Structure formats: C-alpha cells, structure tokens
Length: 71
Length: 474
Image 1 (cartoon, rainbow over the protein chains, first blue to last red):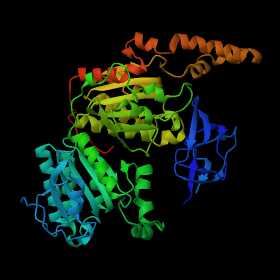
Image 2 (image 1 turned 135 degrees about the vertical axis):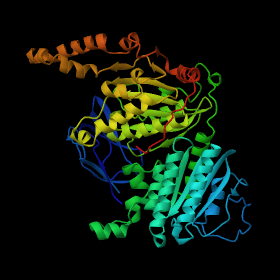
Image 3 (image 1 turned 30 degrees about the vertical axis):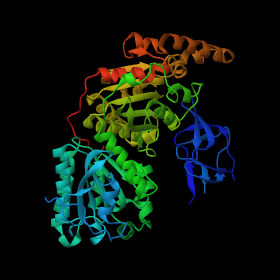
Image 4 (image 1 turned 180 degrees about the horizontal axis):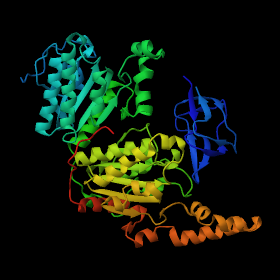
C-alpha cells in the first residue's frame, strides 16, 4: 500500500536528503524543511521504497502538499 | 455473585475464549472467575498483574459474536462496581458486535447501564480497554469511555460496519481501514496504544495497570545529584538551537526506565508518556520539535489536556518538558478549533492539583508558554536550563514587528546590519531566561545534569493530592 507523506505545515524546503528509488526505513529523514525558525526533518512513517519525491530544494510547501510517496 | 475456581475444562482451543484471554492477562495462577460460565457473552474475574490486584471482564466472542445483552452487561457493571469498591484497576477485553439485536431496546438499555457504570468509575479507578477483535456499535463506545485503549492488530472499532457505510454513503471500505489500528492510532485518537498482536496488547495493558494500580512512592535520594549514565537529558539534544530533534529519547533519559507512550502517532507534536520516575509513576508531557516544529495545535492541545486530566484524577504527578515555538498559525487551525480545543489544555493544567513540575529546555514562546504548565497556571515548580529562552516570541520575529518602520526606512544595504543589531538588543532586553527568573515565573535555572534530582525533589516536597473529577474523553 502506498503511503503519501504530506507537509504538516507551511515551510521552505531546505534540504532534500533522499532520492526517488531509495529504500527507506521508518524514521529515516527524507527532506528537511525550514519553518518557524526551525529545521524540521520530514521522516518516513513506514518501511518501503521511495516511489516519488515531489519537492525540490527552495520550494515552498503549503499544509497538505505532497512531499513523497512510499510503497 | 459466585466465586468459582478456574474451570477444569481445558479442552477448548478457540483463541477467542474469554477465559483463555483473561488467564493470559493475569499473572500465572492468579485468575479467579467471579461467575459461572454462562451464555451471557461476558466473563469476569479477579487476578493479579505484576502482583497488584486487578479486576477484568471479557466479552465472549464465541457466544453470538460477543454481542451484549442484559445479562452480559450486568456482569460488566458488576465488574466495574467491584473494582471501584476495592479501589483496583479494571480492564476490559473487547471482541463484540455490539448490542444483541434479538433483545431489542432492552439490550440498548443494558449497554447504556455499562456506559453509566464506566462514567461512575471514571477518575476513581484506572480503566483500561484492550480491543482484540471487532468492537462495533455499543461495544465501540465502551472502550472509548475508559482511560486508555490498547488495540491489537486484529482490533477494529467502528459505530457502523462496512456494509452499512456502503448502503448509506456508497463508500467502499473494509473493516481495517474503517476502524483498525492505523485509522484509530493515527487519525481519530480513539486508540492510545497499538500493538502487533494480542500477546503484546495484553503485555502493554499489564504495564499500564501496574503503573496506575501501584504507583509507588517518590524517592529523590535514589537519584544521584549528577546525572547517571543514560540519564543526561541534554546529551540527546542537538547543539544547535534551531535544529529540530526527537524528544522521545529525552523522555526516556528522564524516566527510570522506558515508559508507555500514549497516542504515539496521533498529534505527535506533543508526547504523552506514563512511566516511573524516582520509583514513582508519573505522567510526562513534552513538546516534540521533530513534528510541526513542536508547535501546539488543536489536536495536540486536546491530547495533552486529556492526559493531564487523567493523571490528575488518578493522582499521578506530572512532569512537563517545554520546547515550544508557539501555537501553529493558519486558517486550518482556526477552523479546526485551536481556540476551543487549546482552551482545554489551559483548563486542565489550571485545575490540576497533583504535583506538576515544568522544565523549559530551550524555548517557551507566547500563548504556548502559558499553556505548558506555566507558573501562572499553578505549576508546582518551573525550572529552566541555562540557555533557555522564555519570551512572547523569538527575538528576530519580535524585531520584525516592533521595528517594522525603522527597518523599512533604513537603506536596503544597511537593513540586515540594523536587523542584526536590533535582534542583539532584543535578546539582551527581553530574551533569555533572566527576565523570567527576575519576575518569578521561572523558579530556578538548573544544570541539565542535575535535572532529574531537582525535579524529584520538587515533586517530593509538594503535598500529594488527587483531583476530584472524572476523566471525560476530551
């Protein structure tokens, strides 16, 4: 089952750590966002393969925007 | 009420057998059935959990799918009332399709009496539910009214099943997606603890019953003045102040041994954990900067509020670890009731009479500072680490608002230099922890290494008390 990871809050995409096709485990950092003066890692919430990474460094994401899809 | 010894018939192998489930819940050899086995669909018993007396009831899924009728409901009421009389935890093992249709409205009345018994017991004895199979309709609200709900992988909770949903709304959905551990553990907040199988669900329920049923005495002398190995809270935090981190290892370092986290996946920006601290059961509430930057929002405020009220009603002291940038801004939050649901946390802390100690590790800003068990809400003690900042907002954000005109008027090439200078000034005047210490909203600045000892001393010095209220499932 594919799991979509969406932005929890408005933020800048500061760093993209993982790439599409990577095998990830629960808790692995995929992307680091910057918001509220904090660097906030976005982590995988399940084990799987990163099917899609929908953001690039410098993007601004809104709450609910797709960041990644894990299968 | 009759007391019988454990039934001699061991031939049954149905895993849904309530006697097997109750036996697996209690310490080996401690199970005593408090009724003869019958066709009511419920069995209840007394036993010990880690040596602590407890009472438990189980719906009998081998009888009409565990459906609840008059007799069965009366057994549950008897179990809950007995637990209140004896002041012991009461646990419910759920696997039930809801009220018995054949009994009609009589069964509804009986289920309603179960709910009333649960509310009578609320805040008087710990009530823990373990959902091992489907718990539908009336059986859904039973667990929901108790203090803590544990769900095994096969557990399902819903008001109406997939077929009714399909016929009414046209939605195609299976039982797991409708009411399994994933939706209830992550989205609805109905379930506090999810586990991979029945065995671990019962193990978690046992831990919780032991924590709440035998809370122990706090013993600060058992904690060295300087942090022992594995208990230095600052060692698991990042050096950079703007780097987010997972607060769970900090909570782990605070406690004597790993506790049981409640609602781990729902509203994860605040962490609520029961565990032992200096030998005594405590509740820990901590902002988690890893999620939503540690901001409070509508769901996390509600989650923390319910936890605070549960602990207060059961006499469990609270430790609050604060690192909060504020309330989450936005249209979604306002419409989601961040004001109404956030107010629950203010109410919960302000009414709590148990010892409750706050530690500001890095920052406490604005309204969220007040909400996290501040001095004004009646904290027993408020400590801060040396580099902590207690302020209305972060210095740079404050400068942007206070000096907006001055910054706009400055030539563009000088603007950043001016901003940096103003921020420095702001930190000196309003930032850091000194001003908070001066006006008494922070009692003392403490070293990270002495944190455990100082918190233990503060809890031990406060009079033991217990809130006189129930634990409504906020």
